Amino acid sequence: MSEFDEPGKSAAGEPGQTAVGEFGGPRNGGVGEWVKSERQVERERVRRSHARRSASIATVSTIVFIVLVVSIVTNSPGWPRVQDKFFNLDEFVKALPDVLRGFLLNIKIFLIAEPLILVVGLLVALARGIKKPAFFPIRALATLYTDVFRGVPTILVIYLIGFGLPALQLQGIPTDLVTLGVIALTLSYGAYVAEVFRSGIESIHPSQVAAARSLGLGHIKTMRFVVLPQATRRVVPPLLNDFVSLQKDTALVATIGPLEALRQAQIHVASTFNYTAYLVAALLFILLTIPLARFTDHLAARTRRRRGA
Image (cartoon, rainbow, N blue to C red; front, side, top):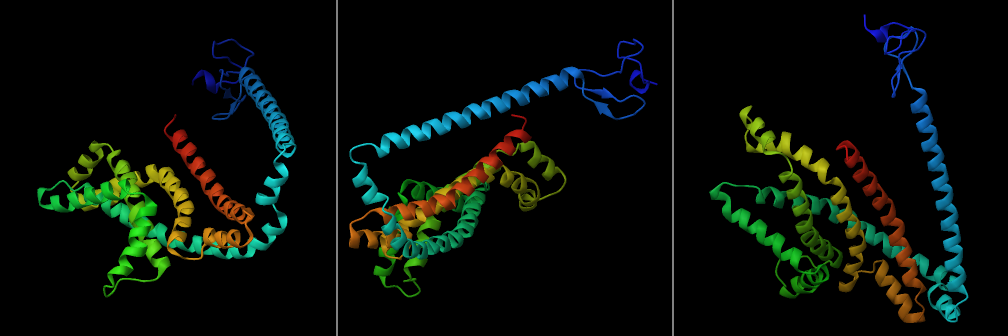
């Protein structure tokens, strides 16, 4: 019987003391039940005290900072004109219904483009990973695609697709402006997402691929059952980061004509010469992107904890 199985005996063998270490020990008479040592309890109490003190200081300093900034801004000489042009409540109420209706189109574009981008990005990343000489043209084409569409600004891709394709007047070419915008965003963001997937695939240690192949798995099954599940988990945070950018860039589709949020705001500004409508559109985008950004931070922190960082 070990010393931890005997109640009333310390780790040093001294009678009358519970056998607990710095991080805990068994309860008297119990097997497998641990209690915290006094040192550990005191350490946790001090940590909680420091955390409460830090939170209190951060709260007070934030409130003081906000009050100071608001006081300086609202007492500046040009504040009345800024308030009238950017923070006009009447214009805000007038513009909100139209901008909100246009913003629903932004969400629709995002929801259609996002799965297409995932498919394109994954296929391109897999194509770039094919090493056999016979598939060199496919690998070269995938490399050319990522190089070209990562090098061209997204708004230029939207112009080329939105105005260039209909001008060809070819049979089967879509003419719907929203569809053309989705195609342009898919081509542009597919190149970025492909590189994210490729980095995840290459982060898997070669020994795992060798082990899978030694078990008789072919290349496709090795990728499906061993590499891709691990690679996908690793690249979820950067993928979500790309989709935060995609949410904002749906506004670029306005340049080819669809009446989405930015376009609706432009119409209001052109008729009233008041910029509050732009503020309405900005607030709607912020309300959509902040939850996804915080979720991305949460996943990144969880990944760091799992890796023991």
